[in-house]
Amino acid sequence: MKTTKTFINMKAAGEKITMVTAYDYPSAVICEKAGMDLLLVGDSLGMVVLGYESTIPVTMEDMIHHTKAVKRGAPNTFIVTDMPFMTYHGSIDETLKNARRLLQESGAAAVKLEGGKQIIQTVETLTNAGVPVMAHLGLTPQMVGVMGGYSVQAKEEEDAAVLISESLALEKAGAFAIVLECVPQQLAQIVTNKVNIPVIGIGAGQQTDGQVLVYHDMIGYGFHHIPKFVKSYGNVKDVMIDGLKKYKEEVQQMKFPAAEHSFNMKTETLDRLYG
Ligand code: KIV
Ligand code: NA
Image (cartoon, rainbow, N blue to C red):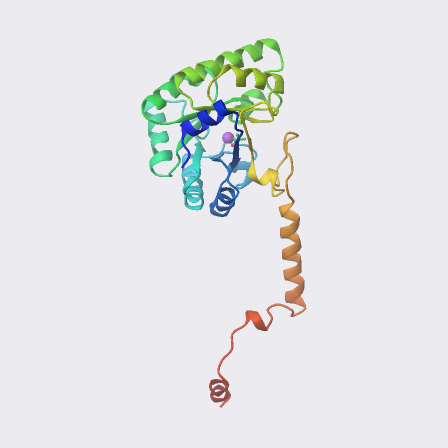
């Protein structure tokens, strides 16, 4: 089983880290079979598998429910789960309770929190309590309402400098890794060089220590907006729609079920039934 230390060692050795989201049992089984280094039960599940407009409606109960399923499907993979919207901004007691539930009740190995300077103290408190924290900077979707949409972050010097100093502060506070979403690749490279913890990029170029993508987006199984930074490695939804259409056709034409899908009675039994 990989640990936070494995990922820090992978960075030091220049070995790329692969992470993908998973939200349920079958996706987790597939991701573990494919050898992903980490799985993220992202609150993107709000859009991807629950059909919401954003990650804002996602609750603790949703995260626990989905993380448990992922844990059953990928018992040997390091699982990070997102702390959902506003579950780590109130009292520290409430934050600790929520993090405890994600680890103890759901089986996650670590939690992910969005934000920089606002959450430094929280990251330190969680880490001191034994909760491994992955930070998330750049485009932070839980801020969609405040940001007024989704766009590339920290393109200008001032914002980029803030992001660099926040990365260093998060490392100092104890974060074991940082997700960097939708920032210029040059900035991602600077951050990657400055911190000793792994930087996992999404829409952040190829110089980060690893990459993360949303499972449904990368295999062609997503029905929400697919961002520019996603590469499609499959077209699962076409395969599925074709399969379902074929099934419908064969039922209509009485090609399915065939003899090999059906059960038989003994002739004597049948004779008696016909009486
Ligand atoms: O929820 C999610 O899928 C994420 C990744 C995009 C990093 O936070
Ligand atoms: Na997320």
